[in-house]
Amino acid sequence: MFYRKLTIIFTCCFLAACDGIEQSAEVDAIEQTEVTAPQETVVHINECPVYESRHWHAWIDRYSSTEGTNRLNITGQIDLPTSGYTVNWKTGIQDRAMPPSQRFILELIPPDGMAMQMISPTNVSFKTETPLLEFREVLIYCGDKLLATMPYVTPTE
Image 1 (cartoon, rainbow, N blue to C red):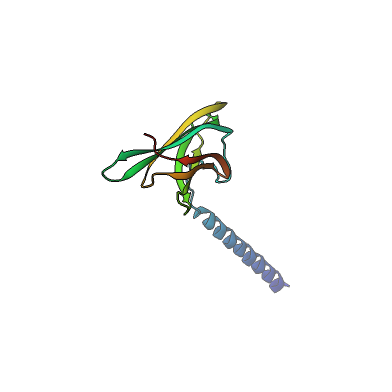
Image 2 (cartoon, one colour):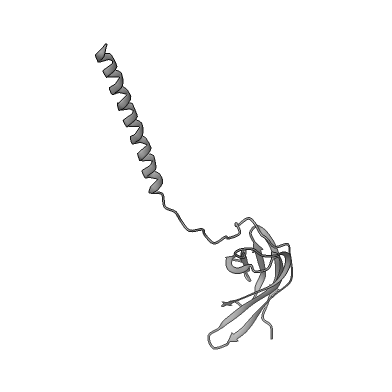
Protein backbone atom coordinates (compact mmCIF):
# COMPACT_ATOMS: atom_id res chain seq x y z
CA MET A 1 0.00 0.00 0.00
CA PHE A 2 2.87 2.34 0.83
CA TYR A 3 4.44 1.78 -2.60
CA ARG A 4 1.11 2.46 -4.31
CA LYS A 5 0.78 5.86 -2.55
CA LEU A 6 4.40 6.64 -3.30
CA THR A 7 3.84 5.82 -7.01
CA ILE A 8 0.77 8.08 -7.15
CA ILE A 9 2.69 10.94 -5.50
CA PHE A 10 5.63 10.60 -7.93
CA THR A 11 3.25 10.43 -10.89
CA CYS A 12 1.43 13.59 -9.77
CA CYS A 13 4.74 15.43 -9.24
CA PHE A 14 5.98 14.30 -12.64
CA LEU A 15 2.81 15.47 -14.38
CA ALA A 16 2.87 18.79 -12.54
CA ALA A 17 6.50 19.34 -13.56
CA CYS A 18 5.71 18.56 -17.23
CA ASP A 19 2.79 20.98 -17.20
CA GLY A 20 5.10 23.74 -15.95
CA ILE A 21 7.61 23.04 -18.75
CA GLU A 22 4.95 23.45 -21.46
CA GLN A 23 3.77 26.73 -19.97
CA SER A 24 7.29 28.12 -19.73
CA ALA A 25 7.86 27.24 -23.41
CA GLU A 26 4.70 29.18 -24.30
CA VAL A 27 5.86 32.14 -22.20
CA ASP A 28 9.27 32.08 -23.94
CA ALA A 29 7.55 32.06 -27.36
CA ILE A 30 5.40 35.04 -26.38
CA GLU A 31 8.43 36.92 -25.02
CA GLN A 32 10.35 36.35 -28.27
CA THR A 33 7.58 37.87 -30.42
CA GLU A 34 8.72 41.16 -31.97
CA VAL A 35 6.67 44.25 -31.36
CA THR A 36 6.58 46.54 -34.39
CA ALA A 37 5.72 50.21 -34.50
CA PRO A 38 2.41 51.14 -36.14
CA GLN A 39 2.72 51.66 -39.89
CA GLU A 40 1.61 54.77 -41.74
CA THR A 41 -2.04 54.40 -42.68
CA VAL A 42 -2.43 54.04 -46.43
CA VAL A 43 -5.77 53.76 -48.17
CA HIS A 44 -6.09 50.24 -49.58
CA ILE A 45 -5.69 49.89 -53.32
CA ASN A 46 -9.40 49.22 -53.93
CA GLU A 47 -10.62 52.02 -51.66
CA CYS A 48 -10.80 55.62 -52.74
CA PRO A 49 -11.84 58.40 -50.34
CA VAL A 50 -12.56 60.84 -53.22
CA TYR A 51 -16.22 61.90 -53.24
CA GLU A 52 -16.08 63.90 -56.47
CA SER A 53 -13.49 65.22 -58.91
CA ARG A 54 -13.61 68.02 -61.47
CA HIS A 55 -11.65 70.59 -63.51
CA TRP A 56 -9.14 68.06 -64.89
CA HIS A 57 -6.76 69.38 -67.52
CA ALA A 58 -3.63 67.87 -69.08
CA TRP A 59 -1.16 69.45 -71.50
CA ILE A 60 2.40 69.09 -72.73
CA ASP A 61 5.04 71.82 -72.47
CA ARG A 62 8.02 71.90 -74.81
CA TYR A 63 10.58 73.20 -72.39
CA SER A 64 13.87 71.89 -73.79
CA SER A 65 14.24 72.03 -77.55
CA THR A 66 17.94 71.09 -77.38
CA GLU A 67 17.43 67.83 -75.46
CA GLY A 68 14.12 66.94 -77.07
CA THR A 69 12.30 66.44 -73.76
CA ASN A 70 8.82 67.61 -72.94
CA ARG A 71 6.83 67.94 -69.74
CA LEU A 72 3.37 66.46 -69.16
CA ASN A 73 1.30 68.60 -66.77
CA ILE A 74 -1.88 67.44 -65.04
CA THR A 75 -4.15 69.48 -62.77
CA GLY A 76 -7.52 68.82 -61.19
CA GLN A 77 -9.60 69.13 -58.06
CA ILE A 78 -10.85 66.35 -55.78
CA ASP A 79 -13.25 66.38 -52.82
CA LEU A 80 -11.91 64.49 -49.79
CA PRO A 81 -13.71 63.64 -46.51
CA THR A 82 -11.31 65.79 -44.47
CA SER A 83 -8.40 68.13 -45.00
CA GLY A 84 -4.79 67.08 -44.47
CA TYR A 85 -4.55 64.14 -46.88
CA THR A 86 -1.16 63.53 -48.45
CA VAL A 87 -1.40 62.99 -52.21
CA ASN A 88 1.17 60.78 -53.96
CA TRP A 89 1.16 60.24 -57.73
CA LYS A 90 2.27 56.98 -59.30
CA THR A 91 2.83 56.48 -63.00
CA GLY A 92 0.74 53.57 -64.20
CA ILE A 93 0.85 51.55 -67.38
CA GLN A 94 1.16 53.01 -70.84
CA ASP A 95 -0.32 51.10 -73.76
CA ARG A 96 1.49 50.48 -77.07
CA ALA A 97 -0.86 52.41 -79.30
CA MET A 98 0.56 55.38 -81.14
CA PRO A 99 -0.06 57.89 -79.67
CA PRO A 100 -0.34 55.98 -76.37
CA SER A 101 -2.69 56.39 -73.45
CA GLN A 102 -1.08 56.88 -70.04
CA ARG A 103 -2.53 55.97 -66.64
CA PHE A 104 -1.72 57.73 -63.38
CA ILE A 105 -2.74 56.58 -59.90
CA LEU A 106 -3.48 58.84 -56.94
CA GLU A 107 -2.42 57.38 -53.59
CA LEU A 108 -4.08 59.19 -50.71
CA ILE A 109 -2.74 58.97 -47.15
CA PRO A 110 -5.15 60.20 -44.45
CA PRO A 111 -3.97 62.74 -41.88
CA ASP A 112 -2.50 61.56 -38.57
CA GLY A 113 -4.56 62.12 -35.47
CA MET A 114 -7.91 63.80 -35.30
CA ALA A 115 -9.26 65.90 -38.14
CA MET A 116 -12.51 67.72 -38.68
CA GLN A 117 -14.90 65.72 -40.86
CA MET A 118 -15.91 68.04 -43.70
CA ILE A 119 -15.80 67.72 -47.44
CA SER A 120 -12.59 69.41 -48.42
CA PRO A 121 -11.93 70.46 -52.05
CA THR A 122 -8.23 69.81 -52.76
CA ASN A 123 -6.27 70.96 -55.81
CA VAL A 124 -3.89 68.33 -57.15
CA SER A 125 -1.21 68.65 -59.82
CA PHE A 126 1.57 66.55 -61.30
CA LYS A 127 4.46 67.19 -63.69
CA THR A 128 6.67 64.61 -65.35
CA GLU A 129 9.12 64.55 -68.22
CA THR A 130 8.17 62.70 -71.38
CA PRO A 131 9.80 62.19 -74.77
CA LEU A 132 6.36 62.08 -76.42
CA LEU A 133 4.61 65.03 -78.03
CA GLU A 134 1.08 63.72 -77.62
CA PHE A 135 -1.06 61.19 -75.79
CA ARG A 136 -4.25 59.61 -77.08
CA GLU A 137 -5.64 59.97 -73.54
CA VAL A 138 -4.51 60.45 -69.95
CA LEU A 139 -6.43 58.50 -67.31
CA ILE A 140 -6.45 59.31 -63.58
CA TYR A 141 -7.29 56.49 -61.14
CA CYS A 142 -7.78 56.33 -57.39
CA GLY A 143 -7.96 52.70 -56.32
CA ASP A 144 -10.40 51.00 -58.68
CA LYS A 145 -12.18 54.28 -59.38
CA LEU A 146 -11.59 56.15 -62.64
CA LEU A 147 -11.59 59.84 -61.75
CA ALA A 148 -10.91 61.44 -65.13
CA THR A 149 -10.17 60.77 -68.78
CA MET A 150 -8.51 63.54 -70.78
CA PRO A 151 -8.45 62.76 -74.53
CA TYR A 152 -5.95 64.04 -77.09
CA VAL A 153 -3.31 65.62 -74.86
CA THR A 154 -1.04 67.74 -77.06
CA PRO A 155 1.51 70.53 -76.64
CA THR A 156 0.31 74.02 -75.86
CA GLU A 157 1.98 77.02 -77.43
